[in-house]
Image (tube, rainbow, N blue to C red; front, side, top):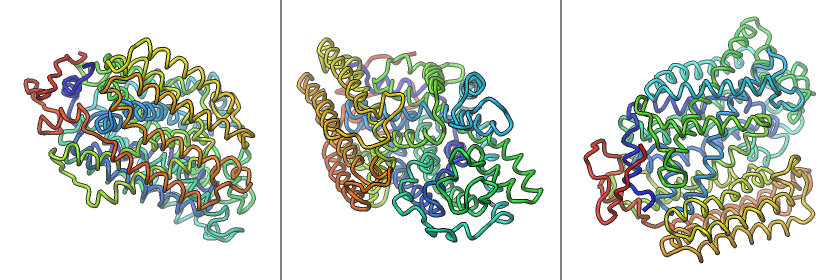
Length: 637
């Protein structure tokens, strides 16, 4: 067996289990309060107007539903790199690989976008680091500045989880205080009530469809994604079964309150003339001519008038370094644990499990995450362009929270659950549908890029994982993967949404042909893989058909729905709002039922159940697995 439960537990034992519930909470809050608070309020207001306040509430509630599902699973099975390991335990290698790769794409890019946020705010007092027209980093000043920040993130993580958690507790205290003071000062000195509905169109001047679209595309859900830190650092907690669920849920609730108040304060503080746009022209807030685009709250505080706010605006520039930096080093640690988790389940080489004995961190995974993260600077689009892609890719993996909680109740029902989710039969599918809607609201143009990046990794599965597991003949896998990647690149370049320098932003004249080719390639690859695999591999492939259906169906609806390219141009959508939402929800509920039915007692979850506990044993002499699995392969060390 290429990678067994003994490998996982032997590696997990080497991690430093130090963090308290407060340190886990501060990690999650440190992930939540980052660049999102600096930019998302302006971005959301430009999309939804004053109704962006509603967008924040919807986004927070949907993320809370996702977090509640993960709280039970994480309390039962606390692991570092948890989110990429759970699908492997419930649906086997093929589902786990697709979703693990998707999660990696998002996690490894966040440190770079946080670094860009620092550089963007710094452009208010530094010349030559940001292109003021596109808000992209310039070479050499901006990109070298960003790389320097990435190196700083690396150092903070390299010296160990004890230092990281203690240092982060102080930084997060500052990060919470400054946004809190910001909305208090703006409410007291800068509130203009007319901004909440006194202009053309009222409270929702751009309609209610953009209010939902803002949830995914403006940075709202991106801001909440930090809740996952407690999950991904769960294997390094002192009392994970109690503390991980508490930190996860509490961080989402605290973030929801903070961000709703910040959005209301920002809307009330807008002085249209100083912002450089016409009164009531919400869509122009992030246009090139807007004075606030690169430093929204700084401009709002300066515009409020009193000298006190002008002085505090300078403090905000300091926080514009501290907040994204704090989130950046947290996410770099998350990226490293994601790489580590993918290695533990066998999707990446065993070398990424290597633990540094002095500081007890996955050091090879940390180096790889830093290097790959820096590649996103070459070139890196603006913060406003990247958040939708990262949000969609991340939340796409969160669909497994509601699925996992119910599958594991069937396949691992005997494991202790310190937190047992009430009404899981309702909250499970609700969390799944909530994640699905966030993905759908990202819009077709975003999903086209995300799905192209997700499926292009399928050849890696047949080149590396499947042959190592003995599921498929290496030569057959090599040929299948090569043919698929060549055809996939050709189709994507013909579609002109991905793998091109200037993505198409208008309806494609031959989208049905493109969509049919996409279906044939993905389903054909999966069908041939099933045919070539042995019995064990076929079981894993069979349990993934629901995910293939789900991704392809949502992709098709997103083109014709209210968030497709036609609607973006103001033309009638093929499936108008809100009928498109009903179609997507029906697709989602069918996929959810299919996924629950497809989940099975994988070999790894059976091995965990056989030990009688979901917590990794701290006793190095304790058996890491029980018969009949007999996994004896030594961990990378």
